[in-house]
Length: 153
Image: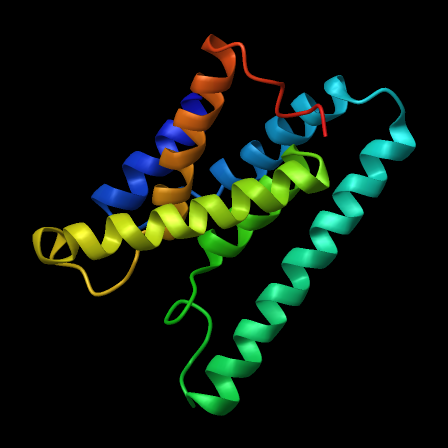
């Protein structure tokens, strides 16, 4: 939670996040995921599938941005921190949970940005911060409620 909170705070405040927070988030998410999995092979399958999904999404975004919109991709359309956060999220959850959380976080980020666009006075979306904010609430809700575990699927 502290790592996610730091990413959220820095992304909103300075639009720059310390680089070491992303590998730390990957390590912590991966460790929690590994501790909830019965077998090591299942963990590797989840992380491999999630990483492939993220890579496909980023590749499609790159092709669309670079060749159709004819804009610079990295740090203009999508930040390096956002990409690293995607991979950290992919290491942290089983594939079905990852897909639901990833899509939910993207939709949440879009709605929050559109609601507060004028008050934020930013032209870019603090995507890693908004996704981290979403995850903090999802994880806390999962811990305090009697809902099924995020690692059950």
